[in-house]
Image (cartoon, rainbow, N blue to C red; front, side, top):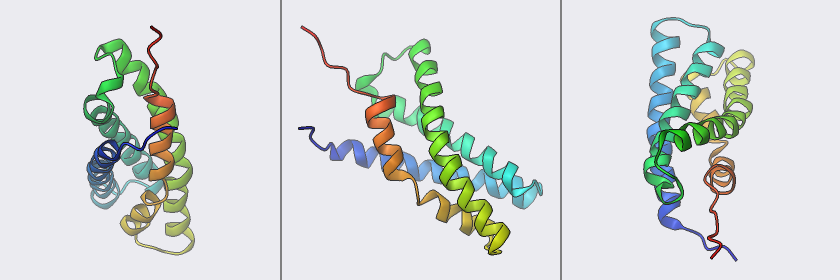
Length: 138
């Protein structure tokens, strides 16, 4: 049975908090200051937060499972982006669009609510897909 790594979960949450700041800051800048459409601003905010989070996860959260070279970094970034973006765009962007368009919820509040929906799914996807532990075959 797999043990729960509380330290890794805490690192994951700290990185996620930083990603939240990146996401909200980019959304505020693009939508609030430059008046981009909420869908485009939200998508850019999500993508920049994904890159931010991946970089911290690679070098801190799951550093014991990576090769620490450019090839491994880029390969895992593509994998992470596919997995995490799927969850974020499906959950976060959908909540953002629905709440702003149909319920007239302030865009930053709607974005925050959307970001609350996916952390458990993202942690599990990273633990078992992107940064999967490879058993040594000795």
